[in-house]
Amino acid sequence: MTMPFYVAPEQFMKDKADFARKNIARGRPLVATVYARGVLICSENPSRSLHKVSEIYDRIAFAGVGKYNEFDQLRVSGVQHADIKGYQFSREDVDARSLANLYARYMGNVFTHEMKPLEVEILVAEVGPNPGEDQIFHILYDGTVVDEDRFTALGGEAEAITGRLARAYRADWPLAEALTASVSALKGQERQLSPHELEVAVLDRGNGRRAFRRVLEAEVSELLSGERPRRRGSKDAADQSGAPEPSAPEPSSTETV
Image 1 (cartoon, rainbow, N blue to C red):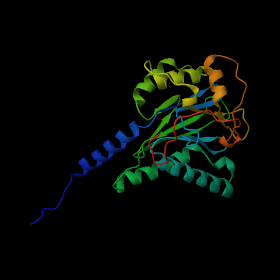
Image 2 (image 1 turned 90 degrees about the horizontal axis):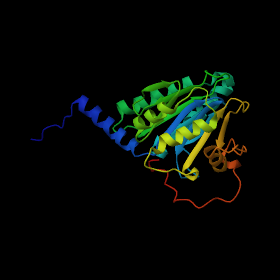
Image 3 (image 1 turned 90 degrees about the vertical axis):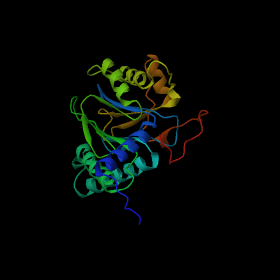
Image 4 (image 1 turned 45 degrees about the horizontal axis):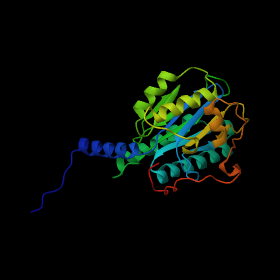
């Protein structure tokens, strides 16, 4: 007689949490911090086609760490939700808090009811009209929402990165200082990160209705070197011009990034 297979609910949930955490930790880390003009998001990402940071709607950005195809599906769903809500009601009704709660409910349901949890952590950020009104929401694989008021880190070694960024953080710091500290927090003391290995974007409250802007490699180099940057960023990656530089092989859309 075959005995039925049984796993205690506590052990089953613990195994799912361990599985999600282990695979998310394999992803290259990402940090977000408020600065004088809005919110900076900086990620280790050598790919030029698989973006970890994207615009959701007007003054809202999305970022993810972990399995690319899973967090990109979340991004697309967020864009669709924001577009429909903005069309049915008004653009001002679309906000990061409601979007973060929507993501949290979905990710929590998957974690609780599905066999395999989502192998992602995501970030939803919104730039406010005035300093001190910016919002950063960090949503974990199980749907837990953490409301951050200064900075946060996602992905591998997040705790160590957060500690390094906490020691450097200064209220209302300029973009160059915030970016330099973010890159230093990402790489630690034993590694080097070149501008080509970074994906950087900002939500700039002075950018008009669409606050999202990608900070391109040349501007990142100038900001990190202390030079006065000539603004080259675009609101969409499709606006980038010039011949691409040699890069590492592109990861597949199912890879952990």
